[in-house]
Image (cartoon, rainbow, N blue to C red):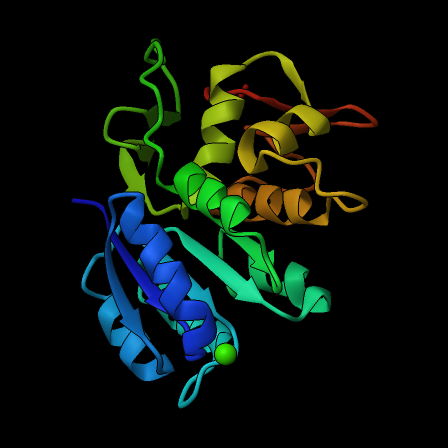
Length: 225
Ligand code: CA
C-alpha cells in the first residue's frame, strides 16, 4: 500500500486532506509536529506532504535534514509563503513540488499522484556511457556507482535521457517534469539542472553531460563526449 506522511498541525487542513488522501487509497500517517514528522519520514513513506509552519521544527528544516541524511522520498510542500517557493523547491531545502495555501484539493491530489507515479520503462541506454538511468529500478549510475537523486532530479534526468542527443526545450522540461509552465519563472528548472550537474560531476562552465543550448534548452549526452 502506498504510504503518505502528512505533516500538518492545523486540523482544519489535515483532517479533510487526510480523508481525501485515504479516499485515493493511500495509507495516511498524520503528524502535527516537526520533530515527529522527521522521525516518521525516516520510516520510508512513499510521499511526504509537508507544511512549512510546524511546531518544534519548521518544515524547511525537516526537509533539509531529510535530504542531508540522504533520503530521496518525494516531498510536496504546503506553504502560505509564495515568496519562499524558490527556496523550498530549489537548492536550499530540496523539496520536489509545492502548493500554496489556500489550495484546491484536486490540485494537491494531482501533484501527489504525479510524485508517486512510477516511471514508464523505456529502452535502456546501450553502449559505453558514463551516466546510466535505470528506469525500472529508478536508479542512476555514474561510472557504475549509484548516485542519489531526489524525485524531481530523477524525473528531469529521465526526460533528458529519453531525448538524449536531441535538444529539449525548457518549456517541454517544465511541462513534463513539473506538469506546469511555472508561470513567470524557470529559476527552479535552472536550480535543478545545476544540482544535477553537480551530482554528475559536470562543470557548469564546460558541461559534458548536460549542455545548455542558449535560448532553447538543454541536450543530454550520457557518454559525455
Ligand atoms: Ca501550520
